[in-house]
Picture 1 (tube, rainbow, N blue to C red):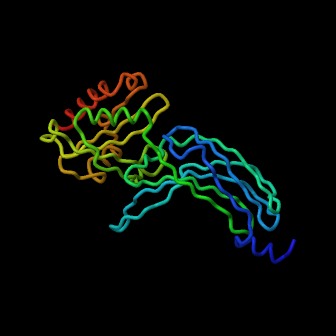
Picture 2: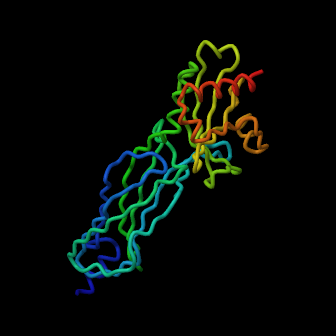
Picture 3: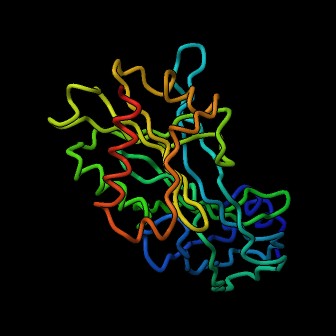
Length: 258
């Protein structure tokens, strides 16, 4: 084993390579992700501390009146223990884990990806990025359908930093809707945040007459814990369908817009 090859491997030349192959590329939160990590040994034997997969996303944070995109690891999963990857060796390591419940939906170019890495001491660690599409959880789909039944139109979605988030992550995903004819004389915007629970869904509902956004009424609902703004939906209620949820949502909107 040449000293020169060892030195090259440390900076990534002729080192082991990885490629993560997913069973599919479209998921929803709380769904199983299955796949295989392919490892191709390089020009020298290399000791690998472990193989890990991080679930990554990004959120927007305002700082000094500027918006910055912050990358964030929602979870990290260990795929294998320490091993030695032999020169030219080919390995396949299967994995399975659950996509975190607070993974953002990939609306409006929101990014979610898996970062796979080999932990190799004193060397440039090989990595692989795989972007995935995250669809709304079936419970969330019911709420989206309910907003349509009430005449609302989806406008935009954003993932924003929130220091007092009750979600276990430093951000929330806000869904904004514009009202149809029925509510246009009451509000200018409907804002929702959804939180998956083991047996249902929490929905933070905010109506806005002046479009102040996340920094106004919406953020205050988190900070002040305005319970009237939270719509608690049990699994049994969600199973009754979008029309039932639309009635509950309508009552809350009317109450908040008085």
